[in-house]
Length: 278
Length: 269
Image 1 (cartoon, rainbow over the protein chains, first blue to last red):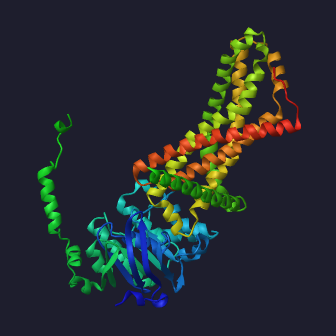
Image 2: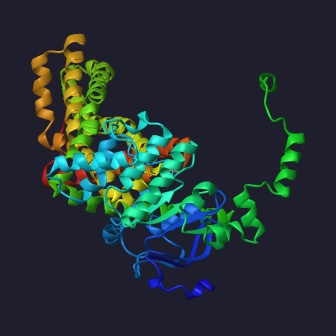
């Protein structure tokens, strides 16, 4: 498949020839992708490969150095912040560390997007909505907690409830299961599937949790050094001939890395003792 | 060498440009906030944090300035038999320069540091990006209420500092140094004019704006990690302090020129 042939109308979100640099470092190198409506697209890749940066471009939290981003055929990467407001309302972004506002309660966090865009008159309905969204992530009853009093997993679940508060068309998940216990991870996976099945939400998930990727993905795209190295369904990725893809999905250490570890092990003590500092 | 110098100059100019744009956007957002009563709770909350909670430290600053001036100036004036004019010297110095500048410096430390640390932490933990992702302008939601609160309350805090400076100077002069209170007030009233008090407070408006804008900008552009937040706080305080002093110089030049245009020179002693 030639990436050049992607047209703005090919998906709900389309990215063409995206290039992004931070200083001298090339983070995204000519990435093109069309994201299908109503499907779950999972982006995998090792840490630092540009997954999160790519996802931030989809909602224009980052602007490309060159390349284009389209939402429903309309170019959005050059829109002003004000012009982006109605488009961003269609998105829910679930940040890696939750990014809950820590000076306000869980309840206020969830109504934040609602409060900013609408004048709330029926508070009973809002209470009910918050209850419902929190129940969906298994966090009902925590309305009056502050984020600082929640565990990492609970914060992620609240962040998810906040991301779906405005019933978005597209939900972007940045490593939704990282750092969670296996059961909570599975709850999140089921939730992503449920939202997609019941609400026909388009999901883009950035992860390096392969168990989660296989479970939720309609399509898996692998990024490596800012380039797409594999693109297809779970079976396609499982049987992909590329060595980098196989090494990543099987979680294997490369020979070069093993060598580096061996060398490091002989040169440096792995554990410092108090007498080392005297 | 020349390359490094050039790079730094360009980086510096770029930095000023970015700050200018940030300030412009903040002003637009502030005007929007001012005409939208829905945002008032945010401003009132910031007024409480920035203004109300700063009253004790600003008053203490003012009081000590007045008291120290009395002690320092008394000897010189008394040797010329002019100790009853001590009030003029203390009160002019407090309301024109020391009250506004030291209250602003105190605010730069208390409020500026807190604003940078708060917004910097929000930046590092992606809370600012989260605000943006909901289609809400972070400048409108986070910066405008803070700048507005600083702009409106710094002049009032300066008046508090002036008041306590005057009272502090009075108590030390009268109770400790034994100056006649009637003469003290009489000379003070002749020396200090509404112009002095109001220009002092007017400076506060600009000092407050500078403190809030610099601190918020540093918070928004803070680098990652605890070190990034720490560096941003230091840069914010230094930036605020230098701006206060530079603005004060500009005000001294402009205001004295304006005064000379309308009124003759006023002998104070």
